[in-house]
Length: 491
Image 1 (cartoon, rainbow, N blue to C red):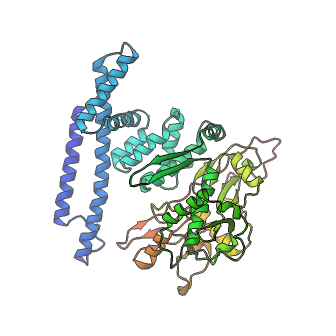
Image 2 (image 1 turned 120 degrees about the vertical axis):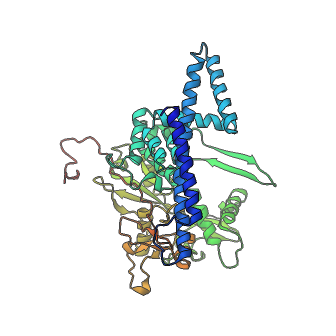
Image 3 (image 1 turned 90 degrees about the horizontal axis):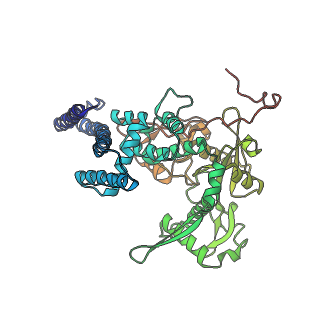
């Protein structure tokens, strides 16, 4: 694209915006699904307009990227070769300052834009093309740049192709542009961890040296306290804190879930509550609010009391472990529910120590399907709940990231209408989206044992749920055909 092409692209975008504005004013933008009701036709047209403006925003961002990258290259050519590192740094500062002034943004923001523009136009052609076509947003493009940082060109191309090339081997389940940016970052980060050219064990050993607790004063007499910890410890703490907060909820409790989490942590850290270990077990715990399976927290209590002697339930964290990684034959990551890939050594340690808060899930070495869910109870409702967590990974509503352990099991076809209590007729929406389903016209679609339910909106639009990207585990080197009986068949 030369300067004339850039001008033409800008003019085309301007015309598209103008045409959309005229169509919206005239009420002509509509999918035609509500022809019998003029008001609904207008509402549907406005939704179509939002979708179209989102595509135009992406195309506009792609043009800005091209212009920024082009200006950077032109300025470098005009300046000529730098004679020293100081000259090179000065030239870069001048370019950043110019772009910052033109866009009326900070130099930090201008520097980030230039770096992202160079990456998109030189190293990520699929991402740049998708942005130009308006099928991914600027946020998606920035996440792709971030997740491919420090990867070599081949690894970056593989990550990009996984999410944007439907013809690549083992493509992602669902197009990147259909995920909200936060969920796309999670899935891209997970794939990056699984396929990083440097072993996750090596990177974890470096990262664990940086563990720390940080304190930062804030406004209004408040402060932030955060901890950088190994993932298993952090996930266990978070799930235990959430379970403790849920146990404290009730009709006479005015605090929110977030406030109860904070109060529970403060109680544990500032008092000698840990001295009461074991004192809170037994039948003292009360029913875990929100559970639709009849599970009660008194069967999951730990030993730390919070606020008035209410026992803190143990965390219930699923660890998905490839069989060969558990045996120490491969170095592929295990998956920690609600977090993502963890080093196999961490998973093996948790399994070997019999950590009661962590439930092991072994997966088939042939296709990555779950083999069995380790559990201390054989109650069917617990097995179903854990299978739902494994199938869905989170609340199945599009864009929701709620990994809460007590998301509500919900019959897709209501029990009163003949629905069964089977995996294919169950979802596990969070409290908010469970309420949405039963108080509005939003309805879930059919599910099966491997696919979570999608959703149909009140306007009739269908939205698919996000699918966890399970993939076959790595196979260790064969010795005299020892794994041939388990190997995947060619058919």
